Image 1: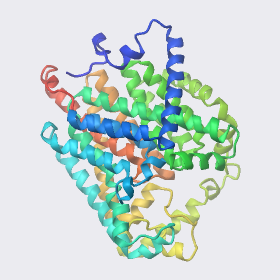
Image 2: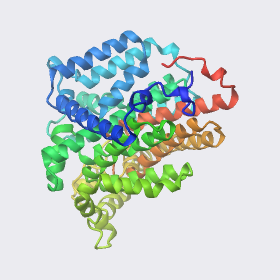
Image 3: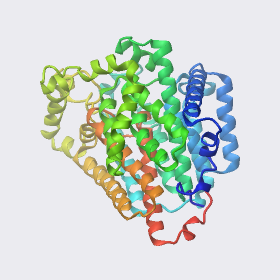
Length: 496
């Protein structure tokens, strides 16, 4: 049966547990926030310390999910763990065998659960099938074309890779982050399924936020230099702060949509933790993209009156880091020079790389393969910044996959965004409209963030992008079904 946020009987899940208390709302929120902080710090610390108890718990959970035969349950467990998948337990090959890292095994089990329950899912629409195949093809071609530059690519890594290792590392492994797009799009068949997945995203962002705050306050220490703080994030979570901030950039609009549907304490607490973590990650991209996402969501839902309230809440929860936030925001802005403001990316990275590609028809139309930045002639001559990627996912896509790959992927992405917008216009159900807005703003926020980094090729840092893209495809189908059918007809299936 579809979840209806407007119905009093619909709050039998998280709201009845977190919202139906005899405590005053403010006291209840404080208790839940304290519990979330403690739980996030405990779980994060346990994972980071490679606790056998955690590993056994995760394996046991997947076995239970395998028996239950619920692909979305299995995938939701993976969603909650993805922000922590750069930690030590996920970096170690079990029993010393290559390719047996815990995340890989979890994804194999998720795929296995999905395959054996494949007939329970819904058929993907033609455009979604085309998108999945096009993205996989463009990515695969880019990786294989990069083999010609392998010697140069190996110059930038600590352990040089053989051609087969290069394929495994940069093609096979990244599909772990891409496959959830297909699984989500196929197995979200009802609004209740969508609610289940968005709850997992909410918990993931909240848990990551709690652990990021723990690292900031108790490991790095408030007031520490940005490099020291980032080194602590790298050593514990295995990602640069600009990679970590992508999770709340995509997740916060999903949390906002969930809160406006349910008005529950869990969403409010995870929103606060997500915003606070953005403040401590010291990422200028986060300081731009998250407010754009929040304000964009409120404007799209005609709730502009909430902007001052949420702005005040953001100021309060990030007050402890304001000096560092102000320093990052003012970084190189005083000069007014575009190259200084962009940290040298415009004149000493993007323009030279694009000019080189434009001068070679093959590179222009087909790209120079993955990691084309480091393999470029400009990099060889030392004419650009000493980096491995161009710090702009659109420039990266052009350089790696050429005009052909760029056009194909941008066209499919435009189709999804357009269909989301159209679905939002025809939807008459308030709860479905919140779902659609959340997905639309989440994808839009990621595209804005892509102007200064990230990637449109699958990787850990953008794993939520593929999940939300799959969610968007599923929501478009649900909205279309609701517009054609009576409520009774659209409530036929149990959640996957």
